[in-house]
Length: 163
Image 1: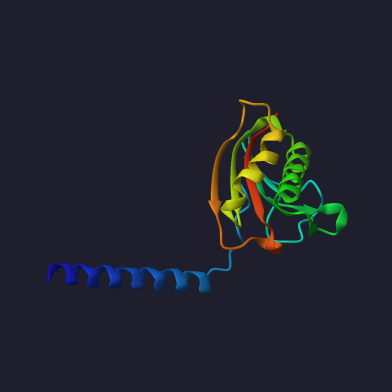
Image 2: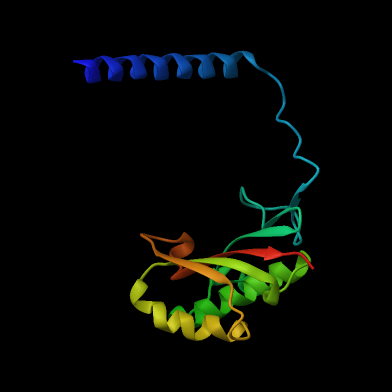
């Protein structure tokens, strides 16, 4: 009985808080706050066409948006040739963004790899490793996912340190 009472109290509290939030957003016409001075949204290739920045700098860290294997010189379509060709293009895209915002491949601290098919892990790693000097690889996580933009096979996002 006590558990049921506690659940009802929590549900009522959540409902009351959501009503407060909904009410305050309807009556508030204040503009969004400006970003903090130590937060920079970087657009090295011009204004974004989608709702994200290619990179965001916070202090001396640069958070790079996830890159898929699109070729900017070919209209932004995913390169043909499977996981190896896509991984190579992904890494070239990361290199291009990192260098254009004041970092480099040897200053990547952490990468996260998203793969449409984890069976392609070895083939992706074969290409990925060529962009670094062993044993200085970034820390890394990898996930198998249900789908990526433009039906890409791989997407990689990174955190870099500014030069």
